[in-house]
Image (tube, rainbow, N blue to C red; front, side, top):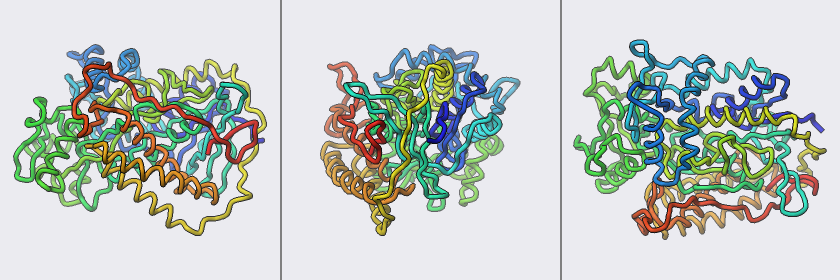
Length: 543
């Protein structure tokens, strides 16, 4: 058997790289591997524009930041988790600076922007490409760290030890598809970390890169982890609407710096929906835009910041200015056509502040996890903060107990002797398209029980079809993502049907108000069974 890694990190965004670096600082002798579906910097972190929220301004305080997070979360945040993350905000910023991230300064202080739902300016940023600044700095550090880096590798499934009785057994690593060679490799590990990001590509329109297919959520579910609050999919209100643009986000900071949302006739509309206007939380703004588009039958609305000086706009939003200009839109003179798009998965694999999941030696950090920080709606720019704070805590916890974790037992290599190459790849493409379209139509910004039941029916049929296909043919990266995305679609639909109220990001026409009688409850799904596939009785790779 291949020698086991001490730590296998699946995912190479801010969360996964933070874990890897923290482990290696504490334990330079540790054998750490970082797995990436594409190149290391291809994930969602690279595309994050706005910034990272931290209460470091003179008029701000952690208590204000906590209050804003709790209000945005609509009653479902874990207050202790919120306080933990917020209180470590300054330390997270300081650590990122130590890694080489150059945040914008003004007058010797960090320039802070304000985004929807924030009562103060507290978003530290690097122009309008904060994610790029963070990701490139962390990638440089991890390349020099001694970690084993595996790019163009996609995890097939986690490997879990099978034990008698009620115990679920520990995680032993993962089977991984080497995309270049088309071969599934065994990667045993003492400790495994899911840092795979969210699942917004389950929807037809998304601001996320193509790889955001919920892989870690699906793998964690199949391995025996509980999954929580999957009904809360955050739609970013302002994604660029242009045939030449693919999922290009217009950061919320544009509205924070005075950008106005307009109907096609040039009139403002946000104050008709919320007294905070353009600075209302994302769920309110996204629903308002959706309502305007449906009422008027228009393809988009417009975001206008052209009333600000051109030098100000170009200095603060150089990436947006350059991208829009390349498409014939001069944002210093013209409004930007925008539409909502799926942006962030607030639910995920249940995990605590150190990333521990239900399965021993399996951690989840970042967007793949549900820690209680975001509740029913994520406050803008809290996601990168969570990646660094929880990634730091998880890295410390893993390093601390590394010597206590025994190496994995003997694990068989991947067996595909009884499957063949597919001669029906078109089925995968058709299923991909169908899932994303019915999720957008029936499980999108505004829902109803009838729409959700329709989605449930399609999910049930496709789960069977895709499961049969997966069991018959050699795996490909497209098939693995399809299998994961139908699993995630099932979890979202089941969770949405279970919530008989509107709260945060979940809005249903049949229950348009929040339940004020019963206390708010998380929607927690529990796996019923763990079936065996391509593995003997000693260990199990969930199907």
